[in-house]
Image (cartoon, rainbow, N blue to C red; front, top):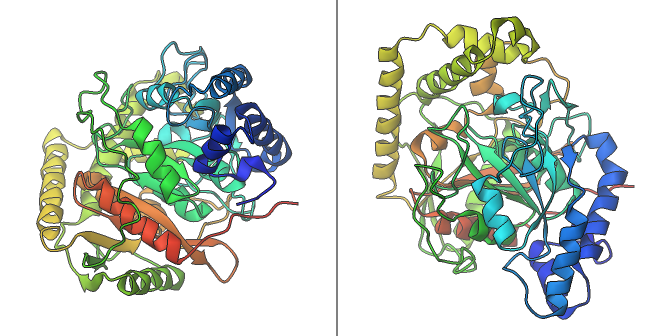
Length: 464
């Protein structure tokens, strides 16, 4: 991290400076917003900035001067994905058909972060209603990758991934229904955690409520754990919200992986594609985990074909979404979204419920698999970040060939999974690997990710 640019500090570094009074929340926010002003025009990571953030930073600065910080994140800047509510701002969801009126309430994850003193200073871009992985939407256009703006940052948490990699503050809220945190994290070279389903409450529930979660996108694993502390608190608005777990998710994060059993997963229920860069990243991560004392071996989880399961959930959710708009206005939606909705609109109730039964069977298979293995290691993405303006073609085919073949299985099973940077490709773009653990064991996923991070440090992109 930069010793001179406060915007590039981790959240933990910022908090240390605040406690020593060597840097103030106002100075940090000014550094972040100045960096946004310089670099966001070429990246397009923001849907809107929050002007009230400066006043909030001033209030935080006064609390630190008085020795009474509000919570564990007092004064740390954070961004909010524009699928989630931030009071006083509209939630546009990347769509020209969304309501432009400001919302009155914060989403549960925003409530938790604000309660600990974090300062939301902007909303980041998303694909329309979070439907796809390339980082563009009809409302805000194309979001670009800080490592190379010709490439996509991924989606649907496109702006969060780009903002994290560009140094627009340390903490960013993403959401993930099929890989929408982990895919942009992989393509942008940052850390993206999909927590256990229900760990971080969601409200309002979106189109993919049966598989979707909110989670941290950060530049370090420790910051992801710190951010999870604030986000993972029960909220009665979400009927799936887990009870509070009072732990600090950083506890034990440095304990390593000695004697853990790690399965290298080659088939997430089908022959998922992966390029040689992805294979090399997994092999490198396996070697590092073995050097840290883990037992690593290839294994098959005997999953059903997860394409068939997720395709039904994804397609029916989008068909329901589209039919919620008047037919005369549907032409304003992303054409690919309309294509998927049309293809899935004729699915019968029996076929859909059969898919749900297969989802539970997949979760059962993974639970049995984790009786033998503590962790699963596999690619996050099938290839390096595509070009930002590359045509999609058949979106259903793209889902399990170009976008999310390695991520959506863990949404179906609802277990925690994290994407961690793993060096660079031959063309300078980031590589990544994915780690998944049993339901509710977010702690060991974070421990293993931290082990890899320490063994394979990762630098952020340089700007002129």
